[in-house]
Length: 182
Image 1 (cartoon, one colour):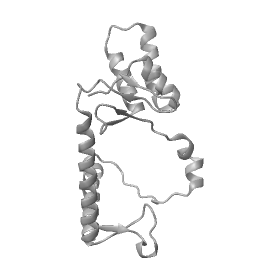
Image 2 (cartoon, one colour):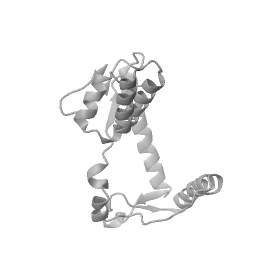
Image 3 (cartoon, one colour):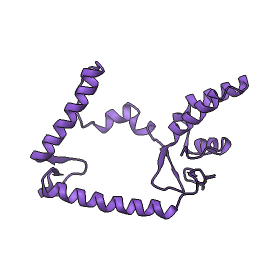
Image 4 (tube, one colour):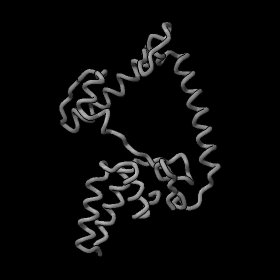
């Protein structure tokens, strides 16, 4: 069932086959421990470190050491091979840092908020609410035994999935009884 609390996004329950909620917490704890160990090893072997670290650092900026540079270049080369060579897409490079005024003018600051929902039985699983809603509406449209009015309604909801407010999307999840897909 869908768990909705005032002022929060909905959470799922009952859709994963009754899994163990402690398993999700244990998995999350193990992931956090492994992540910490990987981070420490990466720093010791100088894959990367926070940029300007000796001056206090700057969040979101990194300095890559020799193995980090090699790994980053290999990932970029694989990306280019797939998208530029195999998919015949054009490569464009732009600045990696954007002024706030540009992001504000383009609508990125005010408009782009991807609401997330989580499965309450497996708290390690999160879903983008708009994508889940689109998938549910698509499944309803493919059902075949729907009226024309339902087809129009499902299509409208699907097409507007990323435009709903937090409360609107919570109401829609309730109305259609949307559950975790797994």
